[in-house]
Image (cartoon, rainbow, N blue to C red; front, top):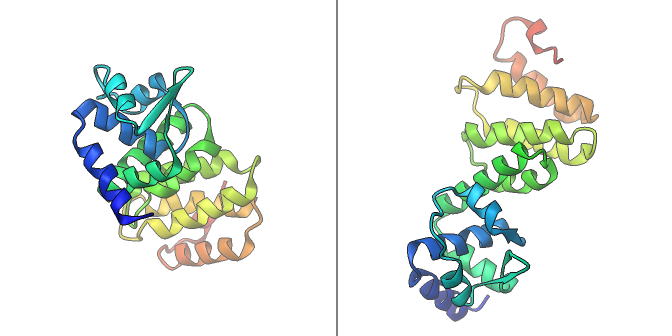
Length: 199
C-alpha cells in the first residue's frame, strides 16, 4: 500500500466524529459486510446514528442495510491506522459475538487475531471455538487448540483447565504429536498423572 494513501485514509478517519469513526473502525476490522444491528450488538457504545457521516466519508459503503469497506485497500489502511490494542479488542468482540450466535467458523479468525501471549480471555474464546469446530472442521479445531496452549502460561491459574481442554480437542482431531506435547507439558506441572486424562 502506498504510504501516501495510508496517510490520507488516516487523516480522513481522524477527522470524523467519534461515533462515525468508531463505526468505520468496526466495519474495517470485521472484514466483511455487516448490518448496522450487528455492529451495534458488537459495540454497544455505538449510540446515535453516525451512519450517514461514516458512509459520506467514502471509507465505507451501504447496500441493503449492510455496511462494508469501500475497498480492501481502504480496509487495510483503516486497520493500519488503529492502535494494535483497538484492533485486538474489536476482533475479540466479534469473536465473542459469533460464538454466542453459535458461529464458530466466523469466530475463529477473529479470536486468532485477538490472541496475545498470556491473554486468557482470548484463549478461552479460542478454545471454545475449537471445541465447537471439532466435528465440522477438525483441522481448524486442531490448529486453534495448538495456538491456545501456546497463548496461556503455566503461571496463570487457568492454564491447567485450558490445557486439558486443548488436549481433549487435539486428541479428538487426531493431532497425536501436538497432543503428546501438551500432555507432557501438563505432566511436568502436576503430580497426579490421572489428572491429565481428558473427558
